[in-house]
Length: 278
Ligand SMILES: [Zn+2]
Figure 1 (tube, rainbow, N blue to C red):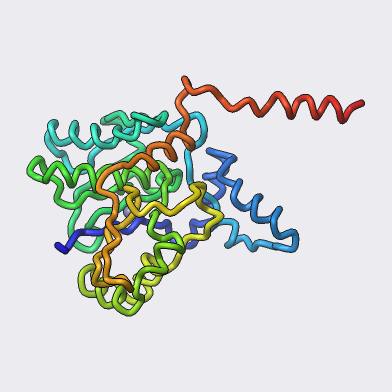
Figure 2: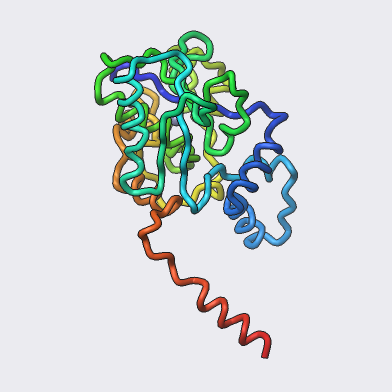
């Protein structure tokens, strides 16, 4: 398999974890939900502040996502338009809108190479913690000559992170297919990562509680492309090359469009409350 550039979603520095978790819950109280669920399953569970910060999700909220986008390095108008078009591909199922602006953009895109290069984005509400002088998403060396397939695979994937979606392959079921020794050798060689970085990025499953989907989807746009040379069975995990059906429906469940009928959950609860009063 050709050497594909894989994404490493950016995490905020450790000392900002708690502030970022606070922000996530202030923007969207539902970001608390997974932990509440965990606590109800395990009454003796006493999470530390660190647990709390790590399992807090970073979604923008049921009202949907409206973010402004700016570019740090003056790409031509046709390229800016093309990137925006692929970011807004998520809008076909979800209440999501990215609009370009020259003033104070919330999503800031650069095409930097070198140490901070590659393809990456901060995750969801974490982007609000990035200094305005820095990009929140990096699309190294993207130009109008970049193949259309890369706009689908990379721009839509990084936009998924901006929407708050984590890496799909980090789920335990997919991580279990990767040979740790081979993976460490492979990512050290191809990405220049340290062993610790490979363990953190590729070999550590996300806590299931932080995910809202039900089954691991190896075709998800949010999955890495894992070459067969590092899997235990020698078969590649064919990462998503585009937003697939499950991605679209997951996005629609996190950011439902206003036209969709809200689930009629409030009525039975109201009845219960009344019954309780009697
Ligand atoms: Zn990624």
